[in-house]
Length: 459
Ligand code: NAD
View (spheres, rainbow, N blue to C red):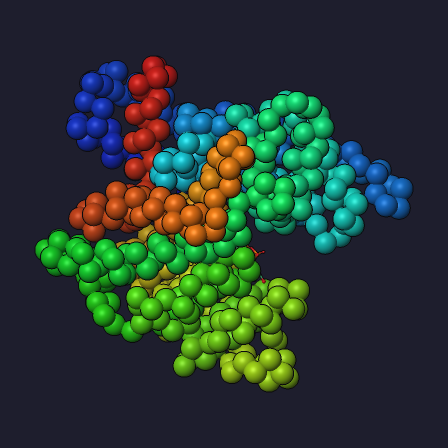
């Protein structure tokens, strides 16, 4: 497990060890032994599967493509997590992402464990036929360990519904007569995907912020005023105050989060900056997000990069350097691109008072500590970006029942699940000195520990 995730898990265990009200049945030496056992269970994956997928390219060349499936922990249910298609996939990174899935599912009471997959390739360098072969081989090589009650992959960076459809089809032909709809999630609607899955992560990202800033702040004013906690002071500073928003990344997650902010009538929001892999656009009066989404839809996902393109699309914005998005003087920064974006080198230049992690691990451990010390509220990845896995869970359920929900039902269920998590975390966060990330980890670790203890697995 990479150091940031592992060190927060270990810090959470250390805090719980001292808390005598947690698992009071465990005392003295037995308690220390059980916690040592927990530390080793949570910091190592159950299994790491590796394969070299042998495929024939369109030009006749035979290649072996490295592929992984990491099964981190299945205490709470079948392993669950995406398959990343990217040239920089590394075993350690996949292990870390699988551990994050274990914690994320525990936090949101999703009955899955944590897993993750990876294939080391550059998707744009391969034809559809080659990608199809790679998908088939992935399922073929890992068919014994996958399945609706064992390990359920989903898309991740570089893969999407097309790949999940192909993988499910291969799984079905390898295991004729067995249930197959729940073997992969993130499929196309026609192949048993869930309505609302595409928007789920971005909607959840914005909801996590909106819920804190609207519902929680309004309902808990007295509690927040009395705690004296630095994060409560930050939140109270935004009572009925207009807010500016910047969004890094304008793909699936970032564009939907920006659109939610644009349409939100409960907060006085203005999305003034958005960025993607090429550029950053700024407008102090607020950007026209629907027009930008329309533009990216017609231009391979990219934002406008020239005055000419902006004028043609009727969009008012000033073009800036891509990475300036991070240092904008805004109230809220939504990170929806890559990992490690805020780090020791730029943390002192961050002006936002709220950071919402749509991407996984976009803030490094050092930067997290520094900004939290200053009272910046960071809504961490495992809390903010769980919309995708929550709706994947609904997809899995719908596949089992072969009964499908409409989009409104999906979003209602998603919001209810995220609200339940926020309600169980926020009072503690605004009442004690730990950053929100650690509060979330403590919550997940408590759940996993209690289940393991009750199952007699801590020895
Ligand atoms: P995506 O590929 O649809 O979009 C990524 C966006 O980031 C694009 O607009 C791209 O141009 C931009 N980008 C790339 N490099 C950048 C850079 N250096 N600076 C600014 N922008 C840059 O991906 P997505 O599905 O929106 O996922 C975004 C992040 O959220 C990823 O880290 C992903 O792992 C994470 N995530 C996604 C989901 C999901 O359901 N899609 C769920 C959980 C976490």
